[in-house]
Amino acid sequence: MLISVPVRNTAAKAEDNSAGCLVLRVQRDLPWFFRVPPVSWILAIQPERRMTLDRLGSWVWKLCDGNRNVEQLVDDFAAAEGLSFHEARVAVTGYLKTLIQRGALAVEVPGGK
Image (cartoon, rainbow, N blue to C red):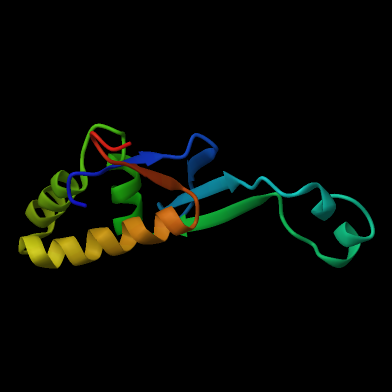
């Protein structure tokens, strides 16, 4: 898993907010029945998902450029924060998992099918 490369979702847009954090907006692909009345009147589902990232999340997002694998992200974070590799791995992989679940990132496995 450490050799996999996190890649940003092209539908995700990032912008800085007034607090210095990143706000991610990810477009949702809603089924047609969520977009027509009367379902659209009853269920107010937003066409995009918004996430406000803290300092760690913003750092991870900026470094997920498709060139670095997870191990390199962990090494960089450990060096920047003065943590051991294992401590940094827990923090970074936890945040990557959250961003993947929310649709902001995808993971490529080199040599995978």
